[in-house]
Amino acid sequence: MKLNLKRPLAFFDLETTGTNIGSDRIVEISVIKLNPDGSEEVKTWRVNPGMPIPLESSLVHGIYDEHIKDELLFKEIGQAVAEFIGESDLAGYNSNKFDIPMLMEEFLRAGVSFNLDERHFVDVQNIFHQMEQRTLKAAYQFYCHKTIENAHSAEADTRATMEVLLAQIERYENVQWEDKKGNISIPVVGDVEALHNFTNLSKPVDFAGRMVFNEQGEELINFGKHKGKRVEDVFNVEPSYYSWMMQGDFPLYTKRKLEEIYTRWNSKKAAERQAKAASQPKPEQQSPKTDAPKADYPKKEFTKPDHTRTQYPPKPFKKKEEPAKPVDNDMLQQLALKFKKG
Image 1: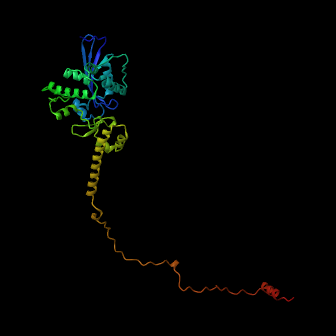
Image 2: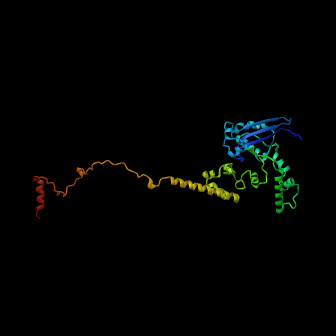
Image 3: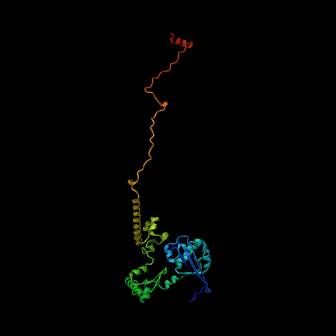
């Protein structure tokens, strides 16, 4: 059955720095435009995201910082992408939840006009999941060709789960599987450790997926502003992040694993402080300070200046004697008045 197209249908896929639509960026976009006449047009752009690509993302899509350092930013190619898609409807795999929102986020940041109104969106993953249901009932029917009796009772569902696993091991015996890196293996075998590794590909630290392991076995934050960063590195730059998570609405098991990491980080810091203190010389080991020798100058005897000298014992005060004045008429009159009788 052929597609009945009234206008082009643009299949597209994005490779990105991560899965956070608000903070991550596109590093590659490929578009195959299927036209109503059956012809195809293909365009692929590598994009400089303007931020480092986390190693975990590069290991998935194979695009590293050195591959895109000379490419244009999205704001410089956004208009060309919009014009190539034109009025096409959009199709992708998980595109409704990820690719379309991520593409629109980039268009908005770049100031590129791209209207989603009146377009149709075809998400191939949704067709797959709805047509091939991922329920225990569907799995039991598919692998065991049976219908669960007394479905949704705990024992019936538990027994069905056990029978499905045994049927899967038999069905996929010697069946090869290729991972995202191109590695080929036979993962479904009768070994519990091998089945554990295959059914925990995301390597969660806490089951809720708030923290995951990287290839080196180090714990990474898997959400929010610190997504993709080592948990211990986050503690180094923002120690209060631990308290925020411990007081937040996170599962108890997540908090338990976070506390284990924090305790280990704290112990490392304490050991580093002790090592630093031990490497510094103790006060008694420090060389005593020595002052430069002073010159041996002769001491000068202090002598008061002449104007401050006082003679001891002091000389008796003598009133300055003035010469006698000659007797004049005034003096005689004063005497006559003084001795005048009556």
